[in-house]
Length: 389
Image (tube, rainbow, N blue to C red):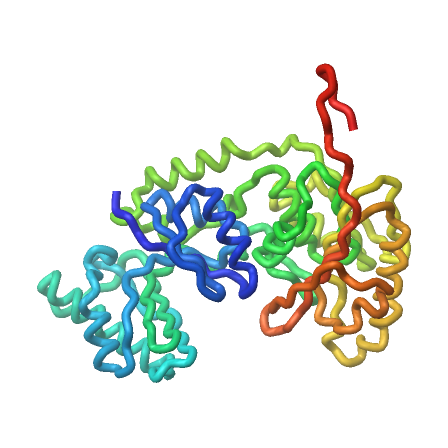
């Protein structure tokens, strides 16, 4: 089976989380850059990466990587790549996106046009024809330039992997599914621990957590472009990957995941999204303000995305809101709290300095992932055949 270099883009600053996911799938990582992890794998890897990766934005096949500082160099180097090994004669291909950072070639539209022409010229020479019907499967190309190094790829995914297929509706400031999963994976939370999101909105944090607990592959409820690439990725390989995902699912697992919000309509949306994800029985959603947050048990987790006050009229409410968050957290016994926000006075009004703080971008918004670490629960020990705490 053909071996590929595969590139998985992710949120900047979360490459280590994606790297761990790829290792866990059993693939060798060859390169880690800002916002991208490159690994090697075959057609099965394309299927499994699309189905199982929770933190990647998409899965790309790297066709070539080379230096280019002129459009002539870009054209010739692209034309020299073995496109016939990837694209069938009837392929519908176009340059979906071109981006350039710190490179002499910086016009996306010109880069797109030249790469497309170069691929056509290569295909003409190989197939011995001068016109292509392009009425077959879609093969969108993506081109990245960084400091004059060009990476030319084919997108195997289609719609970004954050589109799991369960979220038909979202709240006012939704967190992407891939970012939510990445943030959960940055914490020590596991499926047998308590998790509460007091600003759950459309339910992304609780739903992603429940899917992790039940081992539901995030790509189970959607389709991918490469499912139509029968020559490059045989249908049988897709069937086997989906069967593996189905075998690993355990929706009978018991969880203690709760989502609260003050908006009853948003809670209804969250419940519907959870139902579509197949985890509605694993999450307790309820209309409840953060001031009423309480829990009798120890060692739980708050993982949440509270309001940022991006609109000026909302900023005046933030001090009181973050003070309520701090007061609610103080009432909980040995809990940990993880929250992502762009509000720079968050720690001041929570009344506590975070143990850790990571700067991240949520879309174009610079945010901070504040981590308040509670006590760890006692380790379970075996004593004379019984399990004790």
